[in-house]
Amino acid sequence: MPQTSSLATQLDLPAYLLGIVILLLVMLLHGVALLQIAKRYEVKSFLYLAEHKYSSVAFVFYISILCLFFTHLAEIFIWGVSLWTFKLLPVLSESILFAGSTYTAMGFMEDILPPGWKMLAIIIAFSGMFSFTWTASVMISMTKNFRQAYTRMHMEKLKLPAEIIERFK
Image 1 (cartoon, rainbow, N blue to C red):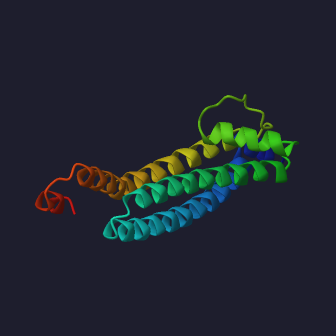
Image 2: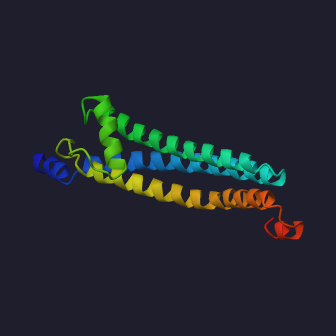
Image 3: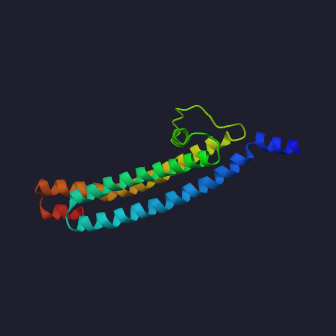
């Protein structure tokens, strides 16, 4: 029986189990947050475009970007607290810093996880890659209304004829 646990440790099996559970939690949080942020942005920006409040579209765009940033910070915090809660790292601030370093794939910290848990760093990195690409796709869709507001605002400043401006609505 000791060889089985040794094999499990060598294969980082506990890391896979914990990593998959936290990864699913993080992706669920990410999906819900992105849905809420994008939905609110789309509704607000659509209304502001209709009301010709182009600066308000830009304001809502930047607030939405800030909310996306806070979503990523929350996910790093979840990973860091998990590492600390399961006593994989002894200090909470160090756990959060390690999670952030790994999540962003910056890797500015050395791998300080104990033996049998090294694979967790790779799973944290995958969660960051998944989250960043998902966020990027939402941001790309958000820029449509942002660009439209920017274009309309500058067309009105140029005092272009109404029929030209109508083409961009």
